[in-house]
Length: 568
View (tube, rainbow, N blue to C red):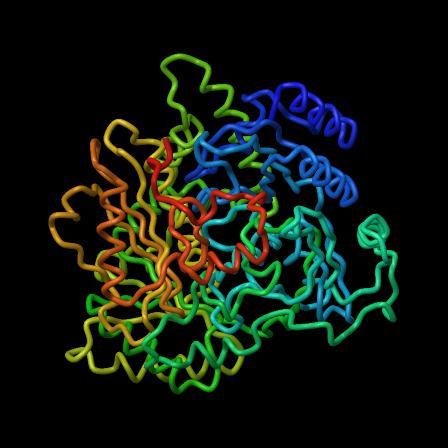
């Protein structure tokens, strides 16, 4: 693109959304161009529309100027997919941030919702409590401020066992055909008008009635996952991003469409819940529990979260500030705190001799002065047991789990582990600690830049019949890591594995060697964070992306590479 046309595009974008929301200064665009974990690159501009119609007009201007468009919501940076990756693209990039486009419309007497691009899981969960309902997903442990549309577009799985990856067949989205012509597609199952302008304005204003809503327009979640996950002897993973059965238009699109709204199912809240904390030094015991519960229980658990002792320890120090912030201030404040953190880091980065991630360094060191935040029961289990499982049950499933666990651990000579039923304080602490675990490795890396080369993060789905689920790396690989952190969604056989590499380690080489081992084990990856810039897309995913975006204009770097060094 020549300089004049670049200038013309910037002028058009400013005319659409205003100067304030058209960012071109590299210092101001950095929080949008760089993910929290991975991904960084240049962008011509960051545009932040305030209405769906502005979003459409911005997209039309970008298509006319033949630039690459990256649609961004929360920018959690888990695999870098919502940011540029390097500066070797064939055209300029415009990032369209949807953070101003929050909007949740409850329909079908609370049984479903329509979510606009900026809607967060925090907001959705809060809104649905008025109807005594809950969303498909509770907030993921690694996605502070995660967006609803981001979850759908990435087939995110999360902790909930019964509902499977985020999925819908109902959405409004923009798509380029093979001739490069832009189309707005309304598959929301709601009559909104005939033109893009009418559809988007009526959608934003909720200018439709109950009679305009088709109750049979499509599926609002994967109805079969609750049966699918019970197939414990299957030689395949339960869920992973490249599974073609969960790709449908917006679902799994990973930025290869511009999505304006999705329609999702909601679910009744549980009347009663209980958390059981299980510890063991024998991985076979946890596998026994998983197989028995999935294979024989009448009531599936809400969640079953695994934490290894090393991950427990790192999170106790480097996730403590997040734990305390949520506990004392509530989840609603966390996105604002992270926005404040970004501002502080951007300012301090300009001051010589200060660490780049000053906010992480400051938070960790202040929290070291505070009293222990984890209950004694959990700390005792940490000392006694290497492997920890947090099992959450509801309603009639509580008695079912308690009876089974009591019987299973009754023979102390036969079992290495034990369990306890958490009181309210312990239950809150257990869930918050698991929540904080996922971000702890990133904080550790940011604080220990002199000893850590980088963070290597794997997101894997193991075969459901894989009894050797706990990884043992060969010494040739293991010697390069300071810490190896294992945690995940145990009943779905989905694991997040974070490796903190020693200085001078070739992280790309280590990752490739570990992925080769996973290939031999029949694992799939990524499991729920999507390919981003850290994984190669397989043939199924490549074909799906090409069908969605034949001109390769929407986020074309997705799923192509591990070619660049990780975050720096």
